Length: 412
Image (cartoon, rainbow, N blue to C red; front, side, top):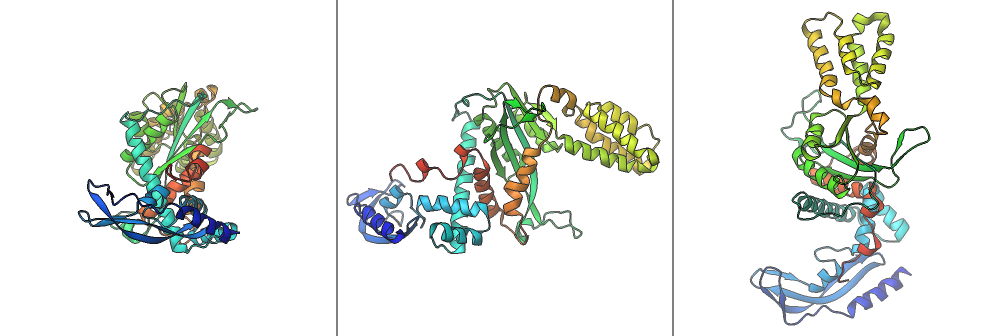
């Protein structure tokens, strides 16, 4: 059946050999002349198809091209748009060797592992470039997205970063946390936007189904900030009643929030704050003795009520000096610097999320389960491409990789 379909597809495409006259624009301001008809084998969802099309050459540029390739969406590539979309989904879901087996087992399409890798990384790089270009247009107000319809009540942006294992070349000269001081990972910054319109039966907020969209990059925080701003605008940040930024307390997250969405409510993830409180109790254990459990329980209650002064006063009630005092000041600095972002009782009374679990799970599911498997060492370019495909795959249905209306170019 596949062979029959491939033969029919080949004959259908051969009906237009792509001859567009003796000369055509080369795309660089010159004219390219017709040379001959040449064959090209293109992988499709029905198997390889040989297409004979007109070939033009530009003497000024020294490059050749086939207008028919551009019309069919296969200029410079050897896979059809439909097969590229299938390959992208398979390669985003698992390792390249597994993706090649899936394509063969489920679709009868045989591609080498290297071909799967190259095609997926090329698609991911193109998608990442498209996201950057769109973000630049949105933040420059040259592209104005329409507000979501219907407009959600609350929009959240949860931001975090996670390390991805990379090759030694990608970490040359970078300091790391290993015993030898060398870095073995590069941080990918991840942001997830989602909406909330209602609370559950227990009164806690519930994320709207299929409302998440992800952005990720290995670029520095100021570049990531532009992507976050553009995605926020695209998701209706300037139109919703309540915009909330969730993070783990890292300074770069709040710098982005303050610069790009100064009117948003900022919330430090409650579970990170509790972890810091447990560490604080552990550092005071030698002073607290058997009262450590009761002291910690009282401080956790202070935290739930947003009473940061109570936590700091209770910790500083013990006379410390030297290194211990410095360590205590550093630990309490986390709470003092983030006190306005830790008003958990007030946040909950407004029906807001106080945890950044959406992005924490995104770091594990979107990034970790594909880019941090045993034995993997990526180039930054390759990891960035696959991370972009993963973000598309995990995002709302309208943002995902494969859509029937977009499988082919308009001309096709």
